[in-house]
Amino acid sequence: MKGKWLSMIGALAIGISLASGGGGEAAASEKYKNIVNVAHRGASGYAPEHTMASYALGEKMHGDYIEIDLQMTKDGKLIAMHDESVDRTTNGKGLVRDYTLDQIKKLDAGSWFNEKYPQYAVQGYEGLKVPTLEEIFTKFGKNNAYYIETKSPEVYPGMEKELLRLVNKYHINKDKLLIQSFSTPSLKIVHDLDPSLHLVQLLSYSSNAVITDEQISDIKQYAEAIGPNYTYLSRDYVQKVISSGLGIHPYTVNDKETMKKLIDWGVTGMFTNFPNLLEEVKKGK
Ligand code: G3P
Ligand code: CA
Image 1 (cartoon, helix red, strand yellow):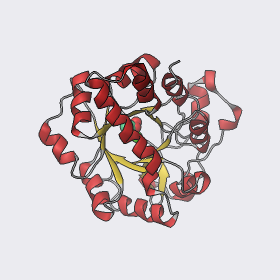
Image 2: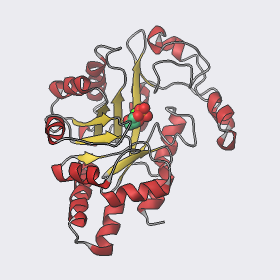
Image 3: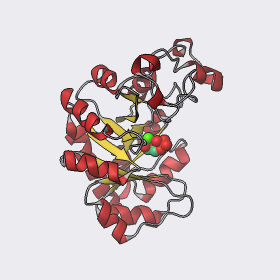
């Protein structure tokens, strides 16, 4: 997604110019417009996460990226699922790594959502299947924007190689692809396999977020942005990251007030389960 990525860099530059006092209303509105809207597990506030229905809704609701968490089956297939276990998001029990793809495909990945969120229940969600990465690439195409996370890479040796094999097999537009992970070793494997890929280092804070110059410098060796949890961020933190030239995409922001605050602090995008809300914020609503 050269276009979108460059527009993110543009938003980043605008963030810096606003922080230094220039810009006025037009620049502020430009800054809002350029915020990268990541449909987190699809539009997972409204549909069962990591199903084709959730991804399609994310697109409809103006998500710029489909966010995909990867797990790997016993027979080495990459599937979209957040947890290592199938328990929370299907009617099955146990670990993904103990299931073959055929067995995973027998699970119902939608009914749990209707039970948990009756206000958003849709009959068509019942019986939805867990998608493979290949199926997602096939359905949404090579020019879609994907934001793919290597989950639990220590459990699935080789998952990075398989991910890149599929990216190449399906001719995925690498300018519209972001690969993210909490695992620095996993990102470095990806970077070594293909230095042209755009990477995002995820971070998790449990108290006031601090990032050192050394950390920033290390991350810049392989990644172009960071993705911290938003809860413990501050304006100073965001500005420090932005000034370094890294992008910053906090997760997972589900209310408009927090979205606006983070944009005013200078973030360049964010993950949300409700991409329609971020779209409204971007339009000044
Ligand atoms: O990938 C950004 C965010 O999704 C990280 O947290 O646990 O939702 O994958 P998690
Ligand atoms: Ca994720």
